[in-house]
Length: 255
Image 1 (cartoon, rainbow, N blue to C red):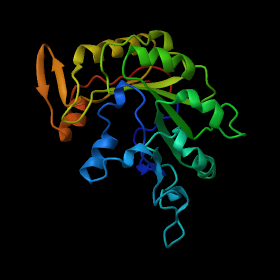
Image 2 (image 1 turned 90 degrees about the horizontal axis):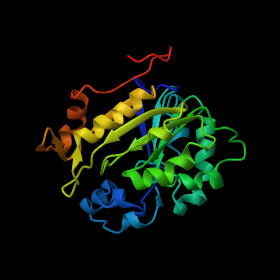
Image 3 (image 1 turned 90 degrees about the vertical axis):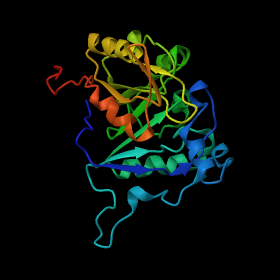
Image 4 (image 1 turned 60 degrees about the vertical axis):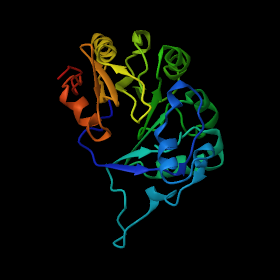
């Protein structure tokens, strides 16, 4: 397992913008952010960001701006496998390869595109790249996860967010899944997330000895029959306060 807890995190968004492809995209934060800054249509097509080559940038003292050992959260204002970004992706892969002293982590709803766009030397995956497959409901899980579990990726995670209903992912919890992360939807139009859905996914992970993380409550959260409206600034810490994360140590034992 490639652990990324207790690391330094950096954001790298080599391009910006996306297109909606499934129910989880309905209230995407990327669209909301663009509308806040007066660009309601900018999310419809990817465009390069000024920090495209951030992993290779250096400080005046010639040290890396992103230090060795960092976890680089990649393409979180787009989708790394977006079709509109095909013309830039090879260069992005090359930067990840050059900076093999860092871990690059990206999520995607387009996991079916991966075989067509991986580098020629990919093999069974780059050791410093973690790929997360996202699913928001049972239909999307049953569409994407069978593909995901069979792909040559050294480090795989599953992200169930925004969680829109109960899900059974037991048959996809293969031994090479390094974490399942679950979260509700943020924003004024957020759909409800129920605590019992989260606890059931946690149960599935524990039964298969797969690490589990509850990363965000969402804005509308139901627990014990009561609806809680949680401000954006508290959705992460309220999830952490639940104390239900499940981790596996180097000896493959839970702690």
